Image (cartoon, rainbow over all chains, first blue to last red; front, side):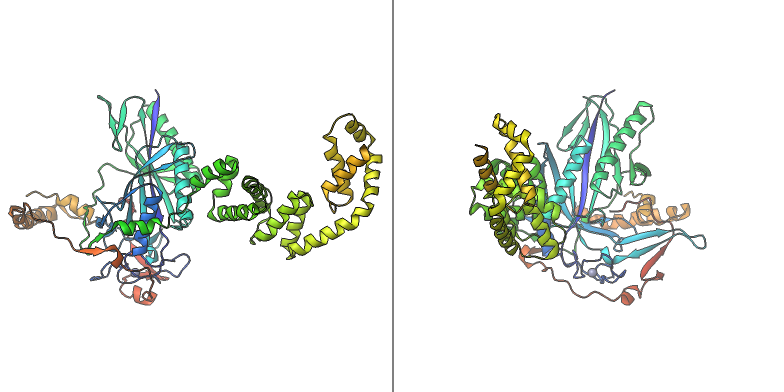
Length: 489
Length: 97
Ligand SMILES: [Zn+2]
């Protein structure tokens, strides 16, 4: 039997605000004293009223705008009820029927378009750790610092078909969140959480309609599995692959499938049963009466839109089309906003002297080959780097020598332009005895000389290299080449 | 009016004995009955009443001091090293967000 894999993703992202979603408590709870960022609102003391954070809603809209969503002109909040110690109110303020962002899409590097059903605003819950004890009943320790931190939930349609696409989608969402400073989206810190739901269905016996998977004829759909506790982007792919294999095996062995929630175990690389879902969730949604309807004008949306900078996939296209940068280099450089802006600024600087495509290619080569390798905590000064690149382009210094100089200057806090001056001075001092060195190299390499004279021009590179080695790089390769040509005539 | 008190109790994590179920069900049905007179009011053509606020009038993102840990834990029945302590196996059946 052949099966189709059907995957939908729910991604929660904590957005980067200074204060919480509905109160003025500070958000930065990481490694803080427990219950030190808590007020009557986030602890749900009687009479406390939620007051929505404007910036949080802007960040939700920004994520929506970056993923081609429609932004609502009226924002409604709803109460989602459930009882759990990490939720002191007994409900989470969320959005039910009217999310802030709806009907979006993201195009993956392979061209596949992922449909986004909605992005809505909600609040995070407290952190609870569970403990078993032999001397007393099981208990949990609750820290409410995280309770009320702004959280957005991105929900795709069940349109994904492969684990790789699901992983690429999560990667792209993380990249957008970081680029636009919506979130640091660190999965290990819980700032981003991915929960795939997965089912496998017999080929040709189902259809997708308005984001719903429907059976064809008398086919009975297989139940879906939701996977939680995924702590990294690679685990998204691994967990889905594991589930697809597990479901296929169970089906083929005739085992009945049940709708269930499973947890990813990153140590064992397996999913583990958590609970079955015999009944549908019953959250008793109701409109949040404590928060008025928020009117959003088109001007408000335009203002948020102005924060929308060029995104990685747009940069990749532009680098490739305008500057003939390879796809690989374009992807690597655009992966972080910092690298992309360094690259673009270096390109602009080099364009003052070089043709713009050449400037871009040099910038890319030096970034990929040298800067990424050298750069530790310290950023390489762009003016220094462009000075070096220009000397290299003028043939005054070899790439190896330039890299060596760059490394030396970074680790020993030397000034590049001083070093270059010294280098050029010693190069001109060397010029006198360079003739002798060239002659010596020719004497030592009779075969190369014969090859060159016999028409093998590539040998020239070898001879230049030999001379450069003897002068320890302290000479101009172009000059060396000219002298060689002269002497070999 | 019918109400599934058992289900409602489960959602609220309240355990009811069969006797209690028997006792509460008619009581809650009476409550629902009395409230249901609202259903008889004709609301055709009446706009829902909603309070509105403009986006620009929302709270700016400026953090302020929270309560102290001591104040936060003052009402907690059980506490341990700065945490609120909750006993019992209430976990598992209901989903975390
Ligand atoms: Zn608070």
